[in-house]
Image 1 (spheres, rainbow, N blue to C red):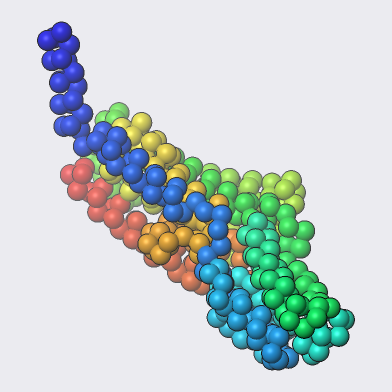
Image 2: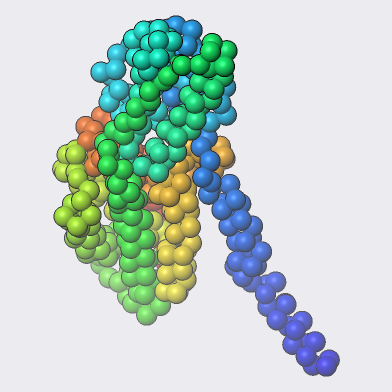
Length: 368
């Protein structure tokens, strides 16, 4: 029995000495439960609303007051013309536009049915359906409140309109997200494993001893994978269009440029990972398993970022896939021009430059 206890103690000592094992056993479960607990939610939060109200009568003001008092909605913009609705969805982060008809209160009192249009961004059809359902619920509660007071007969006729995706196809939402996840996982994994393999085989020192500049060696390793990733991108786009039926409403050239920039970010991330690990297995785990969880949860692929706690929204800003998915949705589904994705392009450029700089610096230090 004493021998058994000694072996158990030895195993505990081995575990406590290995910081990576301790992180996996004790820290990873805490991180996962926090991410899953706060980021995965079906509730609506922080829904930004714009309103077009030509009537400005007591009824429309009461409805706007009910919407503002809801814990789900916030009226952040009044628009002057319904012709600006498309521009509003492209320029600022608006989730819902409410358009009241003329003579709203009078039509409601006469029982003719006052018109109200609920316009949402259909690029995320599940979220759009939830938003319109919540808004319809608020309108219904307003009717239940005023009908008993005035003898009944009041009617409001809501009309739901989904911009960019009137059919409500789920593929419009998940295709851009899957593009971001697939490209970053494959590119990071290929690059990191390739360079770590050279270290494991002992050939990296031979390459560095050659007259070729270390930067040129890294570039020579990255270029083939960049080319193959572009081929992967072409395959994904063709499948999206001809198999899944997702259109490219915007510029194909702009989509290609943004995608190639994202591929560069992913390859740079793989290069950085290769400087931090020593084995191919570790490179595969970090570039595959470790990256997958934050990409799936914090990039907007599955859950809206606006509904997450503020701290997770800030953390999601360092996930490259978040900015790429946002840009692809705007280009493919909304059909925006370049000026509407400049923010995403600037962030990806900054990330690419930062990752390349850190990778080269770390690469030289570890191999000298």
